[in-house]
Length: 183
Figure 1 (cartoon, helix red, strand yellow):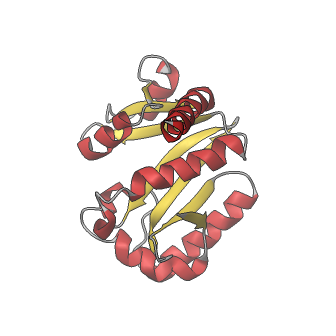
Figure 2: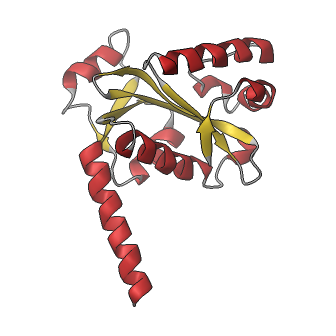
């Protein structure tokens, strides 16, 4: 479902990224597949330095479908950035990729908090975030960070996923699945 970034994916990802329904929401925009190739090389190097964590989202056949990344990693926290190509919208890839990515972040890499900065006009992403039982609106509880991401203009809502809440929900869900299998 997800794998470490690879420069060989630049052409396929660029084609998916440039769709008008996707491009406005991509954090690291490229204007050509060559530029994206260069950006992927930089991201791989930044991950080696501990500045970000980035994965490619794959479809059932191993083809690139989008990306999921944790940007601005500091103090075991960072900002989530994810996008899917238009052909993959509404098919469950986003949620499956997030589950796999959060498991890696929280249970393997020691991340404590994942923040989501979502434009107040991006209702699709807000609804997707609010569907997840471990996502909490943090505009008031993390006021300093909320003010920082909106210092220019009040454009974003701030959400947080803590390792503790994610773990609790994950354990409860696993317990319910095991109980259902026993019944």
